[in-house]
Length: 112
Length: 116
Image (cartoon, rainbow over all chains, first blue to last red; front, top):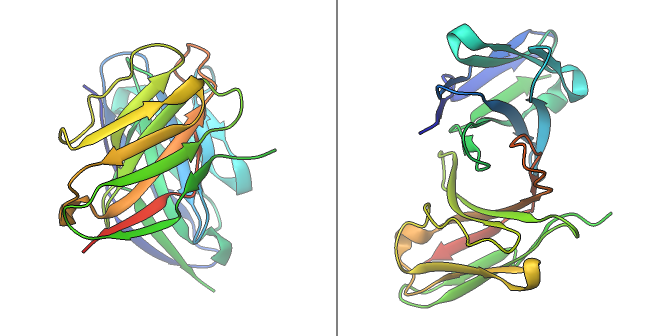
C-alpha cells in the first residue's frame, strides 16, 4: 500500500521568505509524484508532477520539487513567496495503481 | 474548455435522508474519481471509474455509499440514510487515463454536504 506524509500542517511566512514543504511517501516501486494547490475559493489544481526523468521538476508560479528516491521524498520549494501563494498544498503519490493517495495538506499563509 | 462541474454546490440535509451528488467530467476523460475532504483532513479516496471496467469501490466507507457512471460520462454519488459524520466536501476529478499512472487529475469545485 502507498501512503503520503506531509510534515507541516500550517506554515506562516512573510513575503519574500523561502519556502520548503516536506512530503515523504511510502511505496517500494516506481512512483508518480504530484503537488496540487487549492487557492482560496478555487478548485484543486496541479502545481507540478514527477513522472520520470529529471528528478528536479519545475512547475507553475516559480515552484519546484525534487524527487529524492533514497529518502522517499518530494519536497516543494520556492525561493521567494508572495502573498498570492497563500493556499492549501497537497502532496500525492501513485504507485502500483492509478489512484493517487493524498497527504493531509499544508496550509500556507503569506503575510504581505 | 469546460472543466469538471459538480452539483449541487451546497447541500443541507437532515440525518437519515438520502442525497445524490452529481459530477460532469471533462469530455473525453475516461477516468473519474470521487474523494471526500473533511475539515483538517486530506482527500479520502472513495471510488474510481475507468472506461467500461468495473469500478474500484475500495474506498467507500460503508454500504450506505454507492456511485454509478452512466454512458462513461456523468457520475452520481448516492449516500443513503445520511449521518452527521458524512458532512464533508465531496470532490470529483477526471483524467485522461493513458495507462501510465502519471495522469493529471482535474478537479471540480466540490459539493459541500452538511448533515444536521
